[in-house]
Amino acid sequence: MTVPLSWYLIFATALFSIGFFGVLARRNAIAVLMGVELMLNAVNVNLVAFWRYLTPTDLSGQIFVVFVFAVAAAEAAVGLALMISIYRTRKSINVDELNELKL
Amino acid sequence: MVGQALFILTAGITLLMALGVVLARNLFHAALFLVGAFFGIAVLFILLEAEFLGAAQIIIYIGAIATLIVFAIMLSRHVMGKEAGAYNRNWYFALAGVVFFFLLLGWLLIKMPFNLVTAEVPADAIAQIGQGFVGHYVVPFEVASVLLLVALIGAIMLARER
Image (cartoon, rainbow over the protein chains, first blue to last red):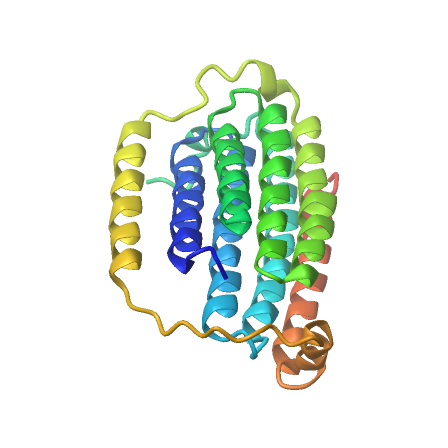
């Protein structure tokens, strides 16, 4: 193991921050969803790195990553279906124009 | 030494791709950058000796999720070109918050002591993952299956023409 654990952690933090910025700052809802995917991937990198460096003989870390895959797939399917539905009625998927729930 | 160079190369390319996802004005370009970022993360999984996850990453993320995102971009195509501003009005608050978050979490992670273990990965790791799914983790596994089924039905219901 020549690569220190902290390199992986810093990389995952940077990836998470980039995805977080995408979620907070982009206007298009699909771009927001891409930011969420980046954040989930950063968490996966952290899980695998901790598994490899702290408990390499116990495979629970990898099993958790597979569950994150399943949740990410479900989230992408429902999120994109919602956006197609919203686009059909509003002709726009900019998140700052969707304010019906605001008082 | 080779491992370190490979890590720096892969991580650097992946971070550049991720920046492309967030900064590209054209949504389709952003989706292509996203595929690149997913591929870089698959390479990192293989560097971490999690070959099964590297393959699953390519099949699930690049094969399914990225394709789904490209389809959604195509179906809402009219908003692609005339996206006047890609960012909302409060993007500088978001930038400041994210930079603060990165510095805080990075500082915490560098300071934190971890009990590193230098054991080898078991040779039958993939078999152990499979046994975990039908043994100790069988309930979460079934819940994940039901979640995927619910997401499938929900996506059909939401996107259906009425």
